[in-house]
Length: 281
Image (tube, rainbow, N blue to C red):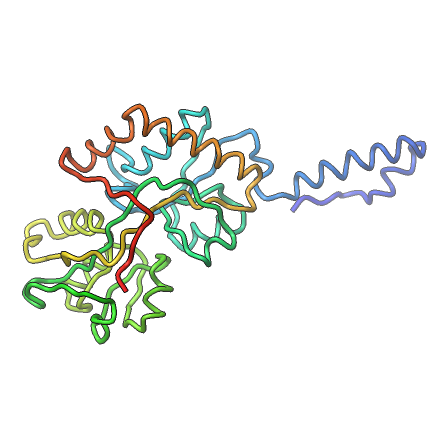
């Protein structure tokens, strides 16, 4: 925090009353700006935070991930420079809450998050399923989350479904990082792994390429969840930046840039999911 090394009255004493009042007002305005988190970055790049989430976010690779490219392209279209920092999911949310970052992505909307964040137009819709080992469950599916009670589910710390699973009374073992869920399945430390379908299969093929055919995912998704930029209400100029981002996103959807990126990362046959999002009871 910025502090004066000389008391304010001592600075004002040599000045005439009218000049002292004007100087005091100017100085207080400067101090107010310096006191706002992130205000000193007003002329620099917009700070974004995210975590490894392939194929959407890739921290080590030739390309940075589908949604990183989407977000960068949308901002670039409206002339906004960005800086992306990689942090654990819970840290990302904390930085947004405290105004240390403009936004985190990709994030689903929840009531708890809406208390401290705004949300962009959807940048993607996740198809959330449960992964399992064929040799353990055979051809497995479900009709309600209630069907999963008594089965140990591997979850990722900081994901939006923590609230939902808790309300349903499900048995969930949380750990940092999505890759941990795949390993816990393989090591029989969990029966199911909750994850976006594309992310889960990307990780399985990366971690266990020769054993991928021993994994399966439920035909039924438990949730179709729109993903957004989760924007800090405390970040200077957040609402105006959000309007610009949404305008840039609409532009890259309209000119084919968005569809091209999806084809490059997901293949030509990938079907985009749209709509407000549904979840199984």
